Image (cartoon, rainbow, N blue to C red):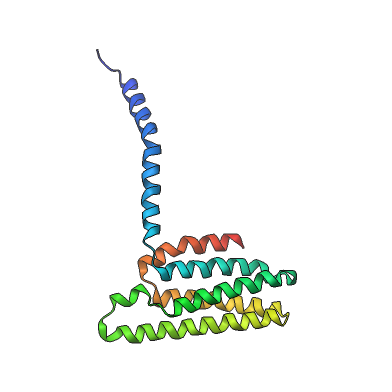
Length: 169
């Protein structure tokens, strides 16, 4: 019995369609494994990023004062935790440069914590416009910090999140 070319193509397409869900499941499993391998620093930074997104909305409304203050407190805790850690890029540097790199990272994180304290003070004073200005300046600090302290492959992973944040605006 011979198989016609159209039956062969149809069989191939049927097999390809049947295999697609399996491939997608495998891809999701691979992504899940990838997410499990995130460092504690990365997790804390994601927490800060989520808080920044919430603040962008809540700082615009004075009636969201309590929500803003709670979010700022959570971000401050995460930023202080991050300040104590070392970026993964430090491990790739020669021993002679490593401590200076970590010190610069810690200095920049101290400035981030200070900026969040200033934002908190502005919200407590009822000055949401000032808090929003600080929020904008923190986004600049974030981009500069990522350029200085993140490995290139980590930056590529973080870019889709930035694109999502820009599309929310």
